[in-house]
Length: 244
Image 1: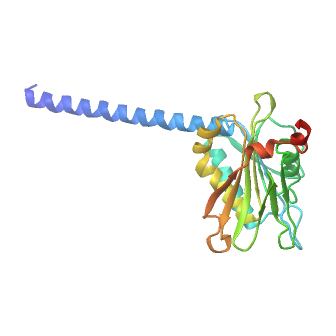
Image 2 (image 1 turned 180 degrees about the horizontal axis):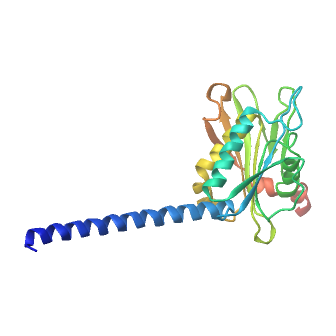
């Protein structure tokens, strides 16, 4: 084998090794990324996740129907679970009679349309109150002495991650004032989970109020953080006056 052929062979070998090392580095980065996502959501590969489905509110709505916007949000949640290699289980809000911590739970909708959401708020975020109704100004998130009201130009979503006792799987709450707000909250969670994990840790509890700007014009696409209400939402009513 002359020198020119040897140089070509050595070049091919070096290129193959370089490509292999590059592929391996990318695979390791992807693996580390997905492991961080799994840790934050409590979704190990092959595990199961409970997605609690709200009912549609409105005249003529069947007890087991969901709105179009909520259906879109559920599709995003199911896609996130499957990306982690876990299995989503859709359960109606009035049929999820089970404890906490055994499976990660993703709970969608307000407390009026989702009985499970009402229970989670009372247990895990006692300082947050979500009301809803047909009249103007009746859709309100109240936390920390502030009222976040839905109107023509804006809607709000309470987005929370609650750590369960004894290091169990977490509970995620997406309680929007409208179906569009529910969808916006889910998309914010999917898009910002890395930043949330960095700020609150893989096992942390947080509660955020998100503002959906002009949902009639922009749908769920224009979302901004209105407030971090973690401390206020975790405070039980009367705790401050009792401490005084």
